Length: 69
Image (cartoon, rainbow, N blue to C red):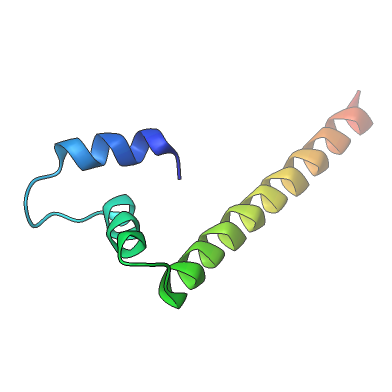
C-alpha cells in the first residue's frame, strides 16, 4: 500500500466509510494485533504470487517471440 493512497482516503472519506487503508490505520493505532499481521502477510503473499505469474508469462512470451524470428 502506498502512503499516497492512505492520505487521499483519509481526507476524502466521509463518516462511516472505511476502506482497507483506513481500516489498517485504525487497527494499527490501537496496537499491532495478529489480525494486522495476518492481513498484511496475505497481501504480501498475493503481490509476490502475482509478480511471479506475470514474470513467468512474460518470459514464456519472449521465448516464443525469439523462436519465431
